[in-house]
Length: 271
Length: 317
Image (cartoon, rainbow over all chains, first blue to last red; front, top):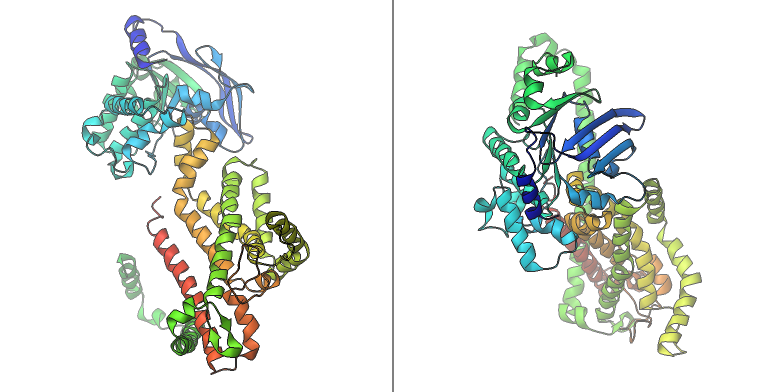
């Protein structure tokens, strides 16, 4: 699906605050184990189309593991077993007949630490298109520019696209990684604490960007920063010891949580 | 020393004076150990320096007696007539080593990519152990195996390709194949290390963009580990160029440039072994062998400096 189609859909569909949007992704009784240790236990939740869903919780609560299960990145780790189901547009993404490579083309990811390839800025953004078999130079160049604009990086790098991505500042590198993920036009973008290694100004830029991107796609963002979750997300899920304790509209989670554990966490009693 | 040194100094000065001087026995022990270690370090350094001095000194004498140009470009090597044209030796050394790189090192690098990126995970350590064993097999064993099994096959191949019944199985190509087999495990192991140093974050980034394991390997892991792989190939070349025993068993020992890939020829190291009995110390024949040793030494130094140069700045991640 192209961005034009997604934009159209966003204009027609009601926003998540107004009414319940259809589930873009759905986890059903998802359990993830590292060896025998359960990192995620029986988690079920919906990710609604074009929402920004924040996942919060203390370190080791399983929120990043859950995020990685949404595009099968846990497959790359030895000894991880996943049971239960994850659906994308109602179709399962786990199963012997499913190619994780194709899942990841639809569900992109931005990591905690920016990880640009030691290649030029242009080649970083073009990477996903090229591995998908795109050969048309004009089309690649057009997509690179679009993605860099969407990531609010174009004006800063347009005159040095041939320079190494590693020469950018930390915040720019992270926006480059976002542009790289956007270039392949994913339907869902998973962000694993994308601003945790950045200074406040760079963090603010990333947060603005996340809010903008919601027009284009569905975003699930893991953060340990509760103010960040409150600022950018529509809904928030609270994880504790591998379980999803509570998920609701962000305002509700932060002002009148239903579970005492959630309240303890957001009021800073632990974590 | 940095701030740490200053801190420990202030701590020790804060201790009572009696304690600082209380253990003369241990301090004597320290001095003895230190002396021992310094002596060992110095010993290794001195032997290396002496080796370089003697090879260099005698080698330069050899070069002066023959002339650098004729030593490097002369095609007739006839010590019994005091004729020392080193080109066949140099040619044989470099071409057999280069052939070994093509035959052995290139597949070894690809095998390393397979073993780190694509092989079933339980098989990976087993594969590595096997290659460690292969790298540790003495060269004479490789030479003996080649003598018995490789030479007859190369003879058949030569006959099939050239239709020349006079060509035997010993020669340049046989040496290159043998050296290729011999350096492959070393190149593979060094390549495995180079590929393993590629950060997981880059593999993750590639996978998350929808790259297949093979695409990640060829587009991210290999380019990132590229310098380390080149270093591995350099070492493979150096090992092939210096190999003596196994090459001597299969190259044929003809002191002339080969007419074809299958012709017998010689290398620097094997020729030194052949001629050393008749080269009495101090004679031109002896000095010329030192001069050829100097050529090998220059190759070794070039490899070390080259790998140093390539390795600069690779510890960035």
